[in-house]
Length: 147
Picture 1 (tube, rainbow, N blue to C red):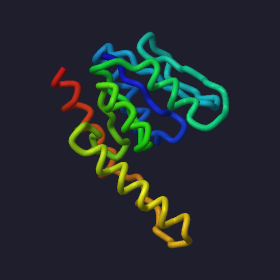
Picture 2: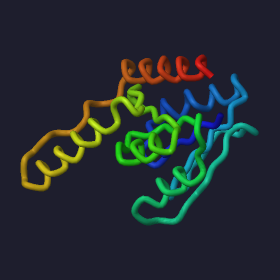
Picture 3: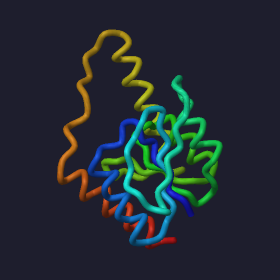
Picture 4: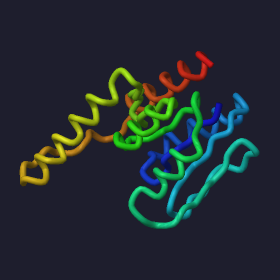
């Protein structure tokens, strides 16, 4: 099992949790990004830097991940592609995306996108804080314990 991280918008506290997990559990964690990123030095932490462009990092993750891998992303369309491939995705706020919920979440995301496109102000997500950090860490631990 590997962990893949859609790293461009991943919060620093989540990266820190993943750095510690990689060392503690000896699990390969690969950060995929299209920008320069400084990571902790570890044989279990890897950086894949891709070119700029829409969905290039997403495509890299989908092409490289395998059944049983975990992908860290807040990108619901990417999560849907991952789940279709047999992997699971975990949002940095601690929500697991799987075959039971990703279709409904994708539909809601597309609906909200249409609303925003028509000029309706929908607001953004709440700030990332301790509660979200703990929820992410707990879900990550639960996923690892099941493997």
